[in-house]
Length: 426
Image 1 (tube, rainbow, N blue to C red):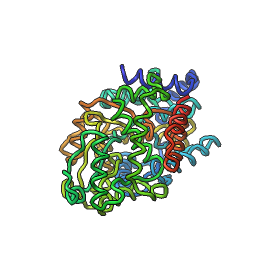
Image 2 (image 1 turned 45 degrees about the horizontal axis):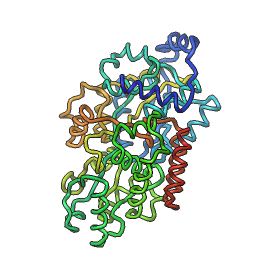
Image 3 (image 1 turned 30 degrees about the vertical axis):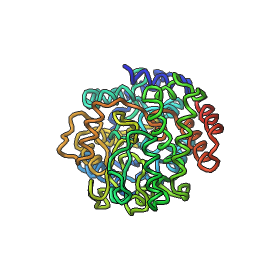
Image 4 (image 1 turned 135 degrees about the vertical axis):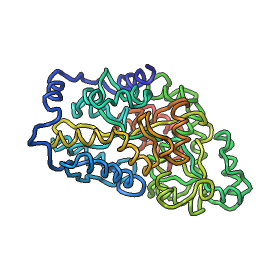
């Protein structure tokens, strides 16, 4: 299927995967379910969810785990830092020294390739069959996380990355409608109108990975979802002539952004919008969980729409959990993973986090207006992967692009940015 072919193409472009041998398969079979002695004890769950809607979503999962896996004790191994930048460094060190947590959060898709290549993850396909997940997970997502017939993670949700959150009062005070501009050019024009009306930095952004998200949204709008996806499967050349025009427009957008962006995390950028200091921020729909937790009302305190020029495109990512090779409490990890994939677990998690369930049998009435709209779009829109959040490419590629984008934030050198983006793809 198309999504499976895309994952395989990314694998071929990014690195040569070593095939999982028979020994790994035998280990999975022999260890399944654990022994009676193992069926208790602590289960360390490693994430980067420490505050706001993310922490509330994790707490929802823990409540279901405590009920359905009562023989086990949840241990919170969270490391703070937006997009997991700090957590991934700590995790890499632990995996290299043979001290894995029982399970860890990882974005489904390309981000898993490094772990798979290093033989650090177990194939969960047998557990999918045992739990009926193969028939319950969205087909688009299942295709995207399947590599050579193996599945290495259990997705807890689906997030949308290409979302703009806006303050309707700030827009209306500048004479602008509280609705999406039709294109990137129209959005830039509206930002100029806002500045002319006293809003110095109409666009609020934060540290480098949030800037990568903005860059991706501009690339989707200017190239279209198919050519954009081709940047990661090799069918679109980063060095091609069509890329610089998009990078120029991205650079123009930064001219309307807050100067203190390098020292902020994504909640700070959202707060600038809700406080009325900025009109827009582009952030994944985990922002919905924060806005709800802050007690803000849709259409009164904030509005949202797909990033200008990307209407009809769902740029996706998915939070998922894995079974590391050598997990100290395998039985407890399997119980956690079963909860993550369950209808109850996904409801308690996603209604708090702002995301939509990975399962297809969820009841939309359990979710708020934003999530219901996102469920409809996920089922009907063209799909595009997220680089910043791991569905498009491995961690090394992500890190290289984040570094390039961070440098561009200061230099504004489009030629250098394009060269660095092309080099990151090699």
